Image (cartoon, rainbow, N blue to C red; front, side, top):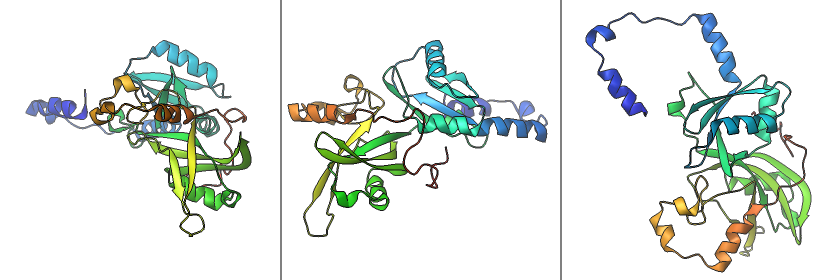
Length: 268
């Protein structure tokens, strides 16, 4: 049932029902509710299939072994509320993402106001993106931020010089809208000389996504984008889609990297 359906039912109330006195919530109860909500995140598993709720709760509780534990409550369909005990545990889990279940990505929302789930869009996911084939000129925090902002909202940067076979790359944690196709490259005139440098992108923990439209949240067999389905991908295109999935870099579990804590927008 959506917001429109609920509004229609409310409009069907009799005049007598609408004239009943309105109760005001006790401020103490309101404060307790707000304190619990402040430590909450709501997550949606981005798949068209209904997942096994009990299996999901069991798996995530075993993976997220934070000190205070986390309470997981099913809400509706593939949506769950995650109640953490403290901000440290919540930040550790969110910085360790993106999280997946049964090859589907989990999109998180921060509850605001009363925490109405019907108002949540679940349209953003944080990914660690490898910007590859970088020249040494680009290995600075400021240029990393500039390049990351060409992809989406930057949450973190890791400037450790790392090589993958023959390329130098850096990591940038990006908030990506799921309704937009995944970006595959960046094209930048670094010296203002007219010579364009192409930097390829790879996404860590990218499991199932659509080879047709390039979006996450469904696979090609479930895609409704008719224009993209008409195109038969070449072998090179198929190889590129597979290559977009990066092997996750070695890092300490759940710990942020680079400039976590120094960027204003990385507040968990």
